[in-house]
Length: 596
Image (cartoon, rainbow, N blue to C red; front, side, top):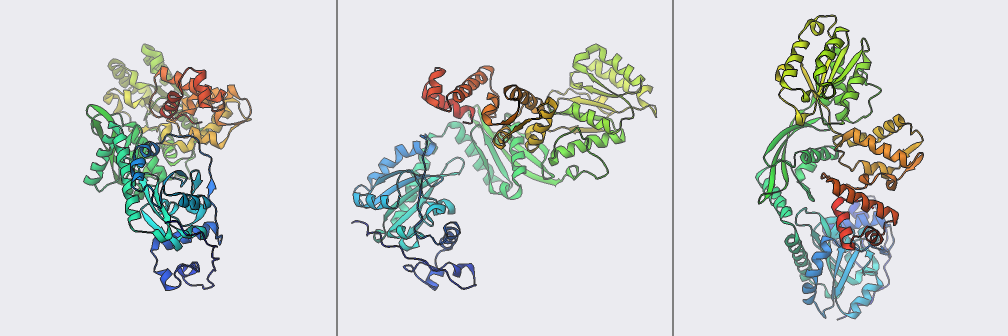
């Protein structure tokens, strides 16, 4: 059997009625009219609505050809082993098996006879052409991607006139671990040959591809996926799972938390993701919600595959409310995200009330800058900043002299003090220099929370404690920070292109603001003025991997980035230049998350 000739397209007429939107979608003249059209499946009517919005009354929309770079995706690897066996079942039949990627771009076309191939070539249903709804209207490939489930588009149900000679059954192929749609398996035949078995066969082929991908998945991926599915079945709460290469969240997480909160939850999960025992933490989210994160490790034997977190909303945090209008924000402090504003406001409040304060936070988050800026709002006396790690045994004498002179006191790195120093400092702060009004100073301690020792006797004297968030928890402040830091460096004529700024927001920033400043210093050495593009950023900024690299791995990453830049992105030439095979450089690019 051969497909019928492609007929001259019928021209659509637009209904002049002002009734419901369903009736405004007039059917093509060759399709069932009036009430028959309104009885069509809802997904089909909605698809026609989308197609009309995208294409108007164009009866012959054309598929665009997309020049594709050679890839080796998980879908293509599975297809190479599965599709030959599947295609054998339809050999010499007037049916073609088509595989596309998630954008509707045709990757392969097998099976069928020469007459069918000729007909498919006339409508550009061939490798390299994109069959999304926005390109050709309702069809088995693009509409299956939009709807997210298997469906059959029969003859006149197609939006495009030339496609009405065909029937197409499309089944989405989802990743067995993440659930993401990777592409579509489509069976296309002449309209007169349509059969409900087409959809069953396409669905079966998609299932075979998923099974193959699951077989190819690593043991660690399977372990995190199994733990995630188990947590979703056992809990009615939002659930997220994070592994080295996998991030998953259930629908409750997407429903209950907006995008900034979701990103914050994922970052907090990554922060505790290396733990091999269960951990529960409370965390402030950008929206003002306090969330309880209950983390459980996912293990593959003795190896850590990742972690699964069940989330419980607590009462809304008052601390993240909008800053009071009558309490100014220090002009020297940059950043407008809710989480950062809350932190700044807490320090400012403590300064205005003269409350002694403990500032916790990772190295480089800006604890000292916060203290100095808050102190400048009430500059009634001097501020002495003493570094416990630098002064050692001289700290107590320096602190005594500063208190005696009437200065406020900031002691950095209090976690480095030994028990004897802590006890002596507590005695000093209980003395008349620090306790008698009106000479009572403002005293602040800073600590690294991961290294904090038990300073309970001393901490009883400090009624407030504030944790300064790491930069990765308020990435939306990066553009403002970049501008402020560049101005501080004297790089007033240097700006970052949007792509470069977005790239910075993708990084983990384990060194926080201090690391960002070093990156900008390096960038300023490379370029003194103008607009900084991605390729001007230091090599470390071209890698999006979130794991900590060894010194040798970092050197290898930088060598690959430099070679790719030197050879204008040519991977083969870059591999040759650094003595690496082409396959290895592809693997390293994926492993390091290098942005080309």
